Image (cartoon, rainbow, N blue to C red; front, side):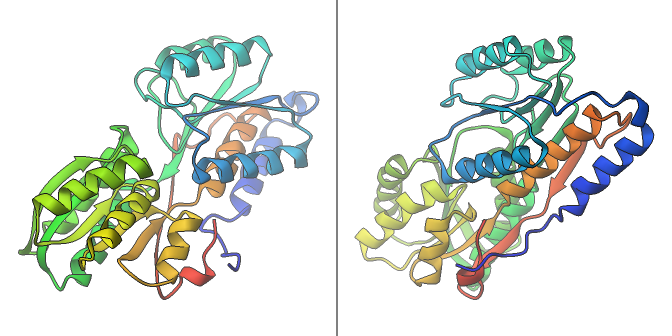
Length: 309
């Protein structure tokens, strides 16, 4: 697939760096910062691509990077942050597995003078900046697309996920879009836990319980791939939309069939901008944005072949 020009220019990071250097040249620290990043999970191409972009960016400034995988275990993620602080990190990029549960780790880091930037999902506590997708927009755009593909009529279901803020926002946006179609009825919402194998079984149950089901929205592409297998196995004409833009999902959309759309996020841009905000503070900026939303984009059969994270 061809490389797509991403939604956030590298100029954003360059500008942040320029402003910070101009405002505090005399107080800039010696040497590159040591960076720690803790992920909610690494068994997901979305976060793998985010990690790759982080390592590439850190290499350009000569920074050492410590990366950990929480495996959706908030206790492990807190422990991982404690270990990073023992290794004297200067910047903590935090992708929380539990926005509320991770607050103690955020406070520990700030007490040690570490710059904390949340990426993809926000965290409670004194976070310096948050960089994340417009998740409500993503859910809205996918379900608007689904409603239009169904000509505004039919029964639809939502394949939900882990109740973190980005997922809740996607569902909220989806429901808002579906409400705009008088002829569409939301008949079921079940939790596929953003996991292919779980979503497969859940979708099979949905299809059996609702013989007139015409469409399904999945909160992420991992769950959508399980739903796709269930739809194909049923032999029914059920349209599927999702959020993420994962390579496997994009390929399925390009090949035609039940999977008709995913609203793509830009994980590489999120971590690049997040690092840029942290570097601005590290280099002396007194004021950085508290939140930077990253645009999302519809990917369907018209542009799937040209899309890549």
